Image 1 (cartoon, one colour):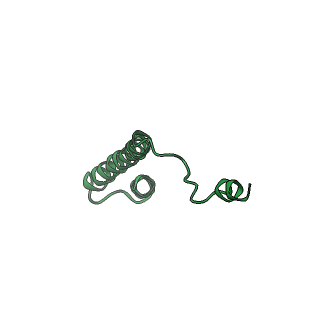
Image 2: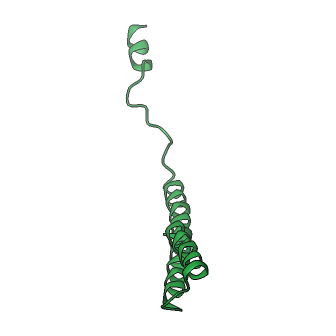
Image 3: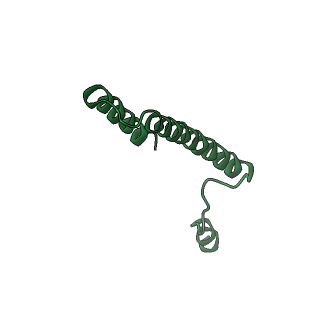
Length: 78
């Protein structure tokens, strides 16, 4: 969203400089609103990743689970 709105802002600026903007105001305002919304979504995604990692760490589960070992078979043989 942020990169798309940044490209739209560049388009609005170039169009204003080259051709003169017939509808002044709303394209730049829309681009700014979408840009800020994209930045907010990006920050929300970072916060979501942090909360997800914190949640998984709080559960205190082991990083791996061994389903079967050779120790049982070694004890039976001896």
